Amino acid sequence: MNTWFTSCVAYRRTPAVQARLDAQAGSIVRAAMTVLSRDGFAGLSMAAVAAEAAVATGTVYKTFSGKAELVTAVFREVVTGEVAAVAAAGSTAGAGKTARERVTAAVETFAGRALKNPKLAYVLLAEPVDAAVDAERLRFRRAFAETFESAIAEGVAIGQLPPQDPRTSATALVGAIGEVLVGPLAEQLESESVVPELVAFALRALGVPQE
Image: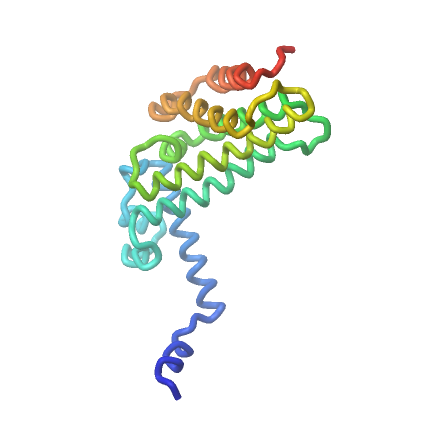
């Protein structure tokens, strides 16, 4: 029998082994998330993540090639949940939501959730990171912009918002919100006025008629 074929068959992962490896990777990502939330990107190391996950440092390196790949996995995990939350808040579900209501809900959810976990949100939005992680950050911003884009596009279509390019407006809005949040997140300050002011700014910027 062909030696190469025999070797491939012998080392093929069984479903049980793959499930165990996937579970271990998930545990390491959650541990990295905890470390990032506590110490930021600068304070994250493979050894710190290993200690948090209660595994050997070598196990972390077997699962992720290095810090950048691990933090990228954390970005994808966190962003998936955050984007889903913002999209749900700004969706048309709950019949008859106006553009004002959708934009308000999306901004409140985006900013409010960030302020509840300032250290991790700062990593996602602004902390200096490796180039590979920074590329993931750009995808993160684009994903959030898409949640605003649909609300803006529908608002324009039904006449609740003035004519504008939804993509440009959504991208500018997410950029502005992120920039405003950088200060409070970096200093881990709680300000009751930040979210209402961001909502008011967003409505003005999009041309939502005052009530």
